[in-house]
Image (tube, rainbow, N blue to C red; front, side, top):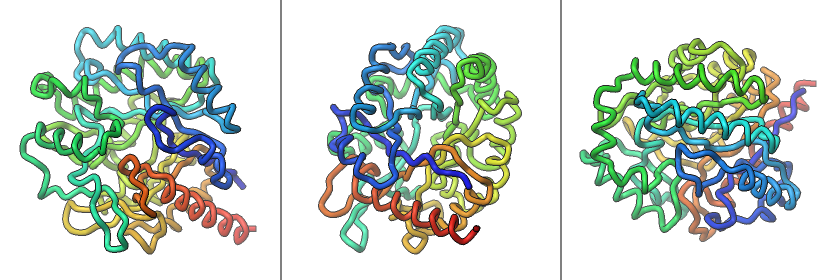
Length: 359
């Protein structure tokens, strides 16, 4: 049967309290899912910086084959004339990453905000804390949301919340005012038509991440919310290099999304090079908090999810996703060491049981 390529997201030596040496000690974890966080969105990732990151990871006894994320410039999502230059930059970045042996680029096509939470440190009954989303507590003014996210970050940078980009929030919203879901999807097609032939030539697969939460907010469109959206994205450019990151937490935020069914449909079509596997706990309508990975701790059946991957011979890249801060750790929201390491052990335990009972 297939072997999972287990990974762990890492934010770099300058901005992550977790060391590569600690990641190396998590059983069966060989992959680091990394990125360059000091290159402004839209600019070319320099080859020397990519190579330096790769060397740093490999010197620690690990591999760097998945990048999360190479973010898409807003001009591409909006469809401005300047998008062609930003797409050209993105193409050069793909070429540079391919020279370093990168196989998958995770990205998203969400306008303005990559993801939203209303509390980055919600206290749970067991004494740990986790990120939480309650739509009823979402500020009406996105500026207030940005202020809350910044203050709740405890000084850590938040992926997708680049302060230099969001500084002109009012102007950014104005630029998107005529971009509905259909237009956003058209702009995604324009982007994919340009980059996928390059990906095919250089053997780098694009893996689009779902919207988080998977619904329109602040009047902004969302185009990766469910299975039907995935079919539309798949048809924008027919190629295995136009793929998905199936994030069980993001898609699972909508209880109507049948995660095992989605896995069973898209993995056999070779459209899923990357998996984010995490659990969440529903606590009301349009309200949830992140939880520990085991099924008993959340609302998602993690056994069914892993069984769907096993039944479809999934052999791609996978990582645990958002976890709690536990045992006194005060790390980046959602990205502490201990709970994600426990998540890996749990997921691999399910996988071992599936392997041994299927023979």
